[in-house]
Length: 220
Length: 220
DNA sequence: AAATAAAATTAGATGAATCTAAAAATTTTA
DNA sequence: TAAAATTTTTAGATTCATCTAATTTTATTT
Ligand SMILES: [Mn+2]
Ligand SMILES: [Mn+2]
Ligand SMILES: [Mn+2]
Ligand SMILES: [Mn+2]
Image (cartoon, rainbow over all chains, first blue to last red):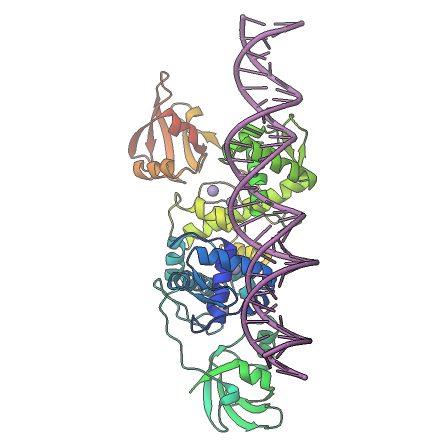
């Protein structure tokens, strides 16, 4: 695996995520949006990544991540999520504070460091947002998960992940008492606006908006 | 404190170290040597650092670090040394393995991260090589230290630091049984080549070269 | 004090990564 | 399907950090 620049790693991660792990093609504009940059910069970078065979790129036709690109992206994602676990478990950060710092730490190059960090953390399988941590070979398994918005009335579930790591969203979840591991039961759903009433841990009754319901993932 | 690039931080550190904490001026060639780069690149960077008032630079006259430059350099050094402690104390790295990785980690920008790391490590005052760790304000105190080469026959001491963090040197110290905290007593000194015979922890008799003796620092 | 050597700076290139503005290709709509 | 709108790429700059080669300044020798 060749040594990539921070920018190359960030682009690869964006292509990987936007393509749903390499399932479908990704547009230049989608990447520009995700990375808060300009389409022209994206075109330029795609040309470079393509010449290194990290992506499959045909001008005007969108881009796909290659096998070697996917491998690199997964290692960066592994590092990102392990560092997030470290920050929360060891340094007592809140889950809304870790993403930004992990964006930097994910680019540190030292396989031994990551191996030791993984051991130190006890080989965690999920990060503080419920996202799976790939192993050294890029392998991982997801928990089965459904957005609260799609759960039926009277059904129960356990919160296993959040779809978005936006700090404001996470802080809001903190405030209303939703966290990974919380037990949920759907009490009522409002067809009109997609909001719902739920019971958390058999004691807290909450009204949540459609936006919240769509971004909280549960298993049953 | 403005945000500096990795390169700027590395140059500032080099100027700080080569000038003995800002005591005297530093030559362009010395910096180039220290950083394994070319004098032309150094001149260029000094011009840029000077325009940001991080160094005091007069063409052909050498460079001095400014007060704000010193402040920045000390924060990078603080991060470097805290990360080294983390790697050794928590991730079980050997003291010869940590410098390279800390060279990367020292550039992570997050004051809160460093504050938390410092707490997590129990506010260490020295790094794995015996170097002092500056506090948030850049303040630190050195242990009084003398190179073994300057200790008189029959005098004892405790190893408190090493002058060089070169992995080969540190591995050699491991092999012969010299470590931070070891008790030393000078048995004999050879005028001819500066080598000496010492007793470590009252039981291991060692012959060490001048090079070793000059780079092992003790207190009495 | 010249001549020579050494050290340092400048000139001019290069490669990454970004940008704005203009041009080209593709998609949508009328 | 032709026109309009949108998306994407290219052209041309800019900034940072580096390099080699040439020039200039300073230091050391005869
Ligand atoms: Mn990143
Ligand atoms: Mn995460
Ligand atoms: Mn560094
Ligand atoms: Mn050190």
